[in-house]
Length: 428
Image 1: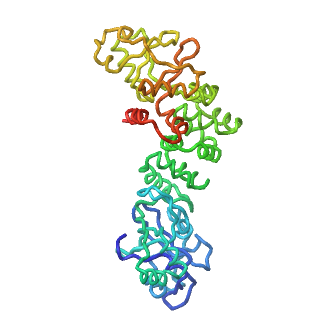
Image 2: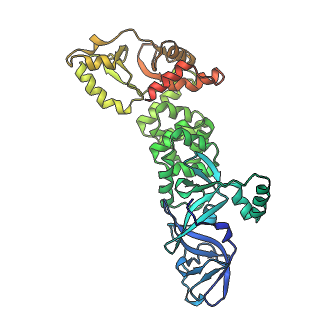
Image 3: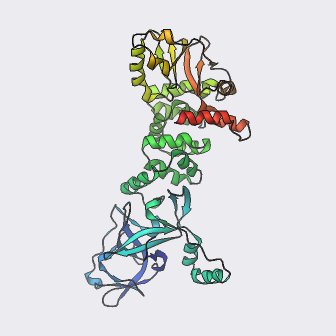
C-alpha cells in the first residue's frame, strides 16, 4: 500500500457542504470508475438522494477535512446518474467477499483505502483485517492502544487493488472483463477449491466472468456437489456450452450428479456429437472401467504406414488427452496392439505400422471395475490402460488421473508413490 492513504469508512457519514456553507446531506457512498489498476473516484452520493440518481461530480469537491466541502454552490451543481462503467463502492465492495488472487483465498472487505494523486482520488486497496472492522465500529484507536501496551500490536491486513477480484455488487461488462483477467491468473484447481467457499451468487459470477474454456477447466477440478450446484444454477445454454468444452468423461461424471431430467435437458442442448459421447459414457456404471474411461485417444488404422501415422497423429493430437500410447486398430475397431511414439518416429516413413506394433497389450474390459483398471495402472507402471468391449473393440482409455482420487480414497488419503510419480509424468 502506497502512502498517503485514507480509509473509506472515515469519510462515510461526513457532512457535505456547498461553497455557501449550506449542508446538502451526509456522504452515503463514493462512486468509482471500474478500472483494472487504479479506479478513480468520480463523484459523491448523498444520504438524502436516491442511490445512483444524483451523483455530485468529484470535480466539485474542494476539501475532505473536517467535512467534505464543495467549491460550487448547490444551485450551480449538475448532479448526474451513475454510468454503466461506474460502481458505488459501499454497495459493491464493503462487507462483500473478494478473491485474493495472490494469496488464493476468499476474504471479506472490512474497509477500503483511498489515495490522492494529481488532484484525483483513487481506490488503491482493501482492508481485510480486524483493524478495518474495528475502525468502522469506532474502536480501532482504543484496541490498538491496549494491544500495544500488552506488547501485541494490532496487525494490518491490506491487499492492493491489483490482486483483488471483486464478487457481488453491480455487475458490468467491464467489471466482468477485469474479473476474468484476474481469475485467469489462478490455476483451475486452486480456483475450484475457492468455489467451495463461495455462495451460489458468487459462484455464478465467477463462472460468468470466465471464458467457456476456462470455466470448463475449473468445473472439471471442482467437487461433485459444487459441480452439481453450478450446473443447476447456470442458465441451461451456458451450462451446456461449458459441458461441451469439458472432457467427455468429466462431463459425464458431472451430469451423473444431477437429477435425470436436468441431465437429459443439458445433453439435448449440447452439440450432437458431444452429447452422444456423454450419453454413451453415462450408460456404464460410474464405478466401472467404462464409466471412468475417456473416448479421446489416438487410434491408428493398421493399414497406415509410419508416415501416414505421423500425419494422422499431428491432426488428432490437439484433441487427445494423452499421446503417450498410440493404439493400432483394424477396420472393425478391434485392438491389434500398441505403438510406441519413439518407435514410430524412428521408423522409415514407408514402414507399415503393423510391423512396428506390439501385439501384447495390457487392457481392461468396459464392464470390469474401476479398481481393476487402477490395479493394472499401478502394477505395470502405465499412464493409461485401454478399455475394450466384449468383442475386443477399443472404446476408450482410463488415464492415471482418472483413478487418483479413487485410490486416495481407498487408501485413506495416502497416494501410492508410484502412481503419484506417473501422474507427474503425464502432466509434464
